[in-house]
Image 1 (cartoon, rainbow, N blue to C red):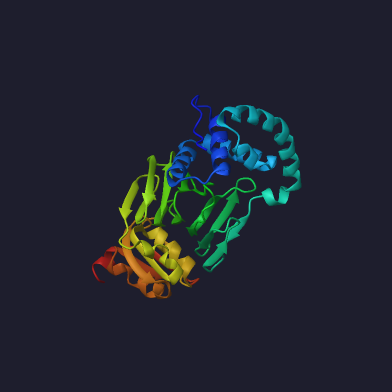
Image 2: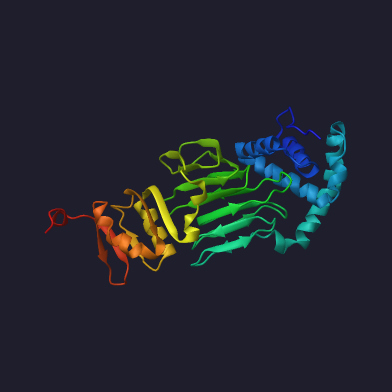
Length: 319
């Protein structure tokens, strides 16, 4: 089968063609990449695809539909709409609990979970991931924190992760998404390829990342880098925190999540950047030594938190 986007540009027709492709054949890497790019191109595409997928799942005879010749598809879909949409409405009532979003949270520890499709996700401490979509969908929203995904192949069905206004569509298998305290969204690829797209909330970005690629997006800029060791992605799983030109507010937030040390970066120093790598259990010593690397001073607060503020004149003069 060789389904293609409808030439008239109608989004619904395109979504139906793609749904037939996904359910009716094992997509090649090129076709899977084309699907990912189509889904990322316009928010309406993902919505239309969800509706098409819902219709096919409700119909329950996917193989028979997928084997029909291309010339019969429009007639098939007219018949399917008449039969399956009422069925889908009934199914929605019967599976209301399953259709609700599922919240996955890690608490204060690193947590590895098996997703419904067999993929694995490892959540950093205080991470919140929400499932979305209908029934067999593989779409997630990273509401906070960071997660490492090891995605299982599923016949071309797209696997997507949204983080604020950034969408990541899997074209490979293993990648990390981070939603930082400062609002930065970072994506790094350990294996395979992912498509990353942002249309709002900062400079537009639309690219395919491969093994070793990393991109950080914030409201002001986009930074794309190559990683020296892709296997070191998500080193936090092994108790190590590593940063390359990271904002101090994000480092402070991570230390508070990954260790027993509580760090508060004042607004005046929140955007200072640093490059560092240290073990989470050595976070106290790292914070104590911050004044040697940045123009800051660290002061214990009554509740035990360490507050990082700008270095005062007297501190600069060594008094």
